[in-house]
Structures are given as C-alpha cells and as structure tokens.
Length: 234
Image (tube, rainbow, N blue to C red; front, side, top):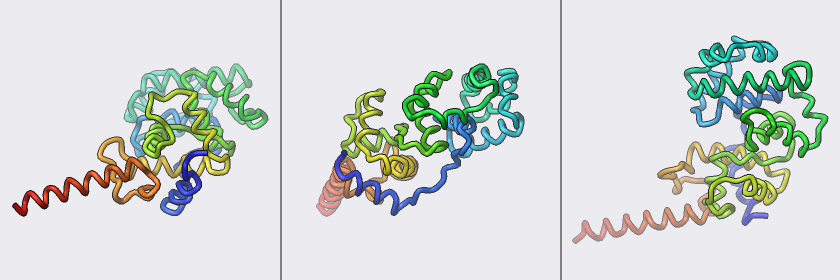
C-alpha cells in the first residue's frame, strides 16, 4: 500500500466527491466514449459521442458504416480517421464474436478474462479496458491515465519512468480495491484543475499536505518571493 493512500482518498473525496464524469453503464458505449475522450477536451469528445450515437443509434450500424462516414461525424474531436477505423473494426470484431455488436457478455467473465478480451480488441489498451470494467461493470480496477500517472509520480507512488503495464499493475496493486474508483475519479478532476502537466497549482491543491512534490514547489516559490522582496528593499 502506498504512503497515505487512505488520506489521499479522503482528501479527494472531500474536495470533489465522486461525481459522474459522463461515463456510460453500457460497456460498448463506454468503450466508444473512452476512445473519443483520449487526448481530447471534454466538451469536444462529449459532443462527438452524442453526434455518433445520433447518426448511428444502433451499435450494429457501426459495423456496416463506411469509415469516412464515421470520420465525418466525429471530425471536430480530432484524430477522426484513426478513431473511425478503430470503431468500425471493433464493431465488426464484436459482431463476429457475439453475433451482434455488444459487450454485456463481459459481465459473465472474471476480471482477468474480461480485461484480456478487451485489450485484444483493435487499438484498445489497458487504460481503456480498465475504464470499461470500472465504470460499466463496477470492477475494482484502477485505470492509469495521464492524470493519474502524473499525480502518482508527484505523490511518490511512481518513479516517473515511461508508462508500462508493469507500472500500471503495481499502482493498481498498491491501492485497496474499494478506493480505486474514488481515487481514479478524484485524480482525473485534480489533474484537470490543479495538478497540471506544467505550472501546477500546488498552493490551492487539496493534496498539498500529502504531496512531497507540491511541498517543494511551494517552498521554492516562497523562497523566490522572499528573495525578490529583499532585493526590492535594497
């Protein structure tokens, strides 16, 4: 277990609660939602998801759709060509596997089997798979996205090396199962508002007292401010 993990979880819960982030209870819908959300601003991927569902209300329609038609529907969210081919390929694979475009059969699988199946789908990585398992099936997993990995590194839970499956598994294993979802949701919100990739807002961060990186940043800022005051006084 990581240093102060329960205190970190409580600080995140107190500040943010555990709000819904727009994720979907249907696992196929959630997978599409996560694909569209990767590296895309919130308002754009939510609009892209809504546009895609409006044009293709039946999941099976995506298996027959032309990639260029999917691409034109989600173009404004970015990476449209890549995502269009991926979405269609996933739909076709699921139809071949289950007879229709669906993912509810995951509910009959254990966590490890469901995860292996999801990462076998075209372009689906471990983070996407665990988001589907966590949000749609309430499985006790910890998806490690960019926000989570950055915050875990600054907390001292990760060493900052390039992301790997081994690192993601170690982070998941260090967090008690009942805390994985609230910590993930809290870290996503923290990463958007406070723990930014550059110029983090450490002074107002709800995790400041638990974060060695934040304490160093604040201490350095205070020293700089003090030196500037001394310089001005002379």
